[in-house]
Length: 256
Image 1 (tube, rainbow, N blue to C red):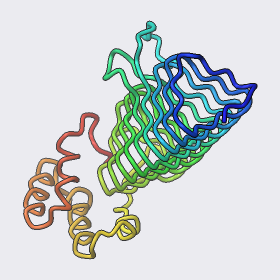
Image 2 (image 1 turned 60 degrees about the horizontal axis):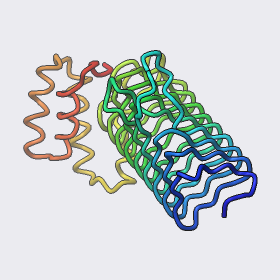
Image 3 (image 1 turned 90 degrees about the vertical axis):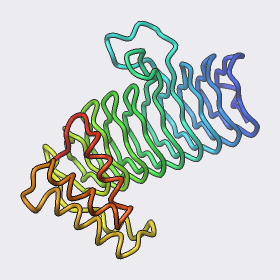
């Protein structure tokens, strides 16, 4: 299942049924679990671990050193989970010693062409990143988030779960759980009602999340007062609690 023109270091650990296409290069410290398909002209380097049943398309670069002048050769890591689709020209960096030392991508993510995932990013599960999405270093992306094509996320920003960022947007602060945004800089637009319906949220839960959104963005409340309002709502609607937790722990501040 390894093409004769591929270069696979003897120290690499390749699982059962892994396919490696023509002219791909697999480094010494790479581990690839069973069923993953690596296309042609792919370079996988560094201390990189890739799970099961991923599809990695041609010209991707995974596990290269970070684009960070402070990097001094530390054995930091890239960890990719299971069943991800990683399209052409994607590049994911290893982490840095100044953070956790690991860049992580979870499971079942749909990552389109030319996506850049910078050092120390933490990407959850079931996300969609359209073409040319750029995550600067230290970005966190929650489960089920959708990032439109050519959107860019500033370093240290967090993108909450079940969010949607419109194409071409520039996100300079945190995007709270459930919220949609667009623009340069990105501004909040509404909650991701359709996405929540598709994922099985009840009408009552979505209505409660809408009320929470209005408390933050429409009722003229300070953020402190909005948090107090959400705390009261969460007592009766547990779906509000993740939104409250997100805005209460925001380091860069939320878009508003």
